[in-house]
Length: 150
Ligand code: RB5
Image (cartoon, rainbow, N blue to C red; front, side, top):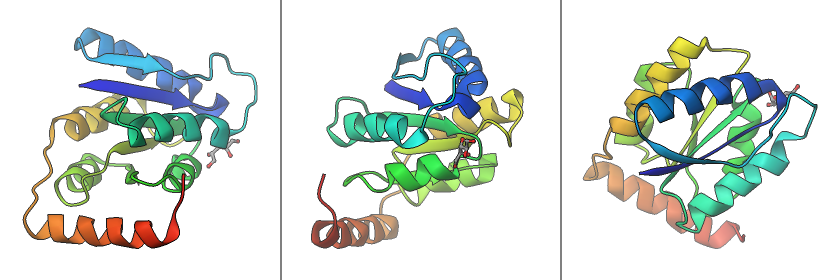
């Protein structure tokens, strides 16, 4: 699985930690920035990762800002994206099993690197359950067809 990853300045340090974690696990990723702690606008980075995931260039994405909230709001504007802001392994598990989340958003000012890496591990390794949850995800897609354009 190839992961697209990006952050703003507030998520930069955590992004670097998660990249190291992915490398240690031999998980392929591409870093779409930001590349320093200089202040930037999170929509510019969230949008890029959401687009490459929506276009199927990458299977999943990880986005990090200060809280994880701004990145989730941005990513969910893009058709085909189901981004989940997770602060626990429980949320990471459910976002995959029930919502088939294709982008994980994290808060660099909220989570310790250890907690964030646990969340990433669960999120990457948990399958979508399908069944009744597929019916619900299809309803989200129908809603999107009527309201969103990329
Ligand atoms: C940047 O200060 C901060 O607002 C941003 O990283 C993010 O938390 C927004 O949701």
